[in-house]
Amino acid sequence: MGKTKINLKSSIDFDKVRFRYPTAPITQPDTLQGVTFKIKAGTSTAIVGPSGSGKSTIVQMIERFYDPSSGTISLDGAKLTDFDLSQLRMSIGYVSQEPTLILGSIRENMLFSNKDATEDDIIRALQKANAGFVQELEGGLDAYVGSTTVQNLSGGQKQRLAIARALIKEPSILILDEATSALDPKSEQDVQQAIEKIQQSENLTIIMIAHRLQTIATAQNLLFINSPKEILAAERGTKEYDRIFNLLKSQNYKHQAIEDDIIEDSMFDQSNPDFEIPEERLDDLLDASMAVKHAVGTGILDLGATLPGPADAENLDVV
Ligand SMILES: Nc1ncnc2c1ncn2[C@@H]1O[C@H](COP(=O)(O)OP(=O)(O)OP(=O)(O)O)[C@@H](O)[C@H]1O
Ligand SMILES: [Mg+2]
Image: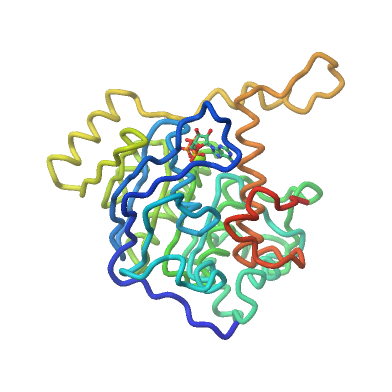
């Protein structure tokens, strides 16, 4: 790769950031309307807010899938736009709600993320991600995994592999966008433990989007999207943190439909001519395609395309 990674030391800063999706209908207000906040380096921060409030948008802007319409985002005081795009993406590990594994061995999946990784690096990353189950798979690191044709992994196991794949890059920033929300309770717990272990042992800037209070409570800082104009920040142990946390508690904070499972079975039932994909599932499909875009953008998936930049994010073909 040749380039050095960004070693985030101080903070990620959003300064009066305004943003609207280029494809947003005219009636839709700007997603972010001049927000200012700070994410402290070397700590973990949970971004919370109602569905559609802009949580995923914020993390995608940090990866420069989108640039602000006005205002600036900076890393340690240097403008995000001044960094080389591949250097930036190399420095960020991203784990989505439904990770895309490459059809191939576990080893190949790891090498996709860092082609220079040694056997030891791979084993270490798997350990950090609580993915000891790999040893028990037939073939171990050579066990075949991947999308639809090979179904030998649970959702939680896939997710821990995705975390290991993000960590093997030795990123400076780790982004987890709803990394546990598509999982059954047992898998969620396994992945949650992995995340907590990483929080305690790694000198990483972790940004997590989560809907469970239990998960949110593991982060040292909270960013609460109060409105498109205002993002409240609070550090654990402060009165403001308790105030926001209690507010979330009283709202029974859940911004994602938990009823997803109910419609799961019928979703692809195309034999029913009256069947339409429920609106709430459309978001999931979009999220899944976003995950592929991220994988392409971070070099995990090489589709032979050049790195998609902010202007391309909307147009990138998803295979
Ligand atoms: N590609 C897009 N084009 C146009 N509008 C978009 C696009 N992606 C998101 N939006 C809009 O931007 C707003 C913020 O979306 P975002 O995905 O960041 O919300 P979120 O807080 O992550 O929500 P959720 O909790 O449901 O994941 C929403 O109003 C959404 O409709
Ligand atoms: Mg989101």
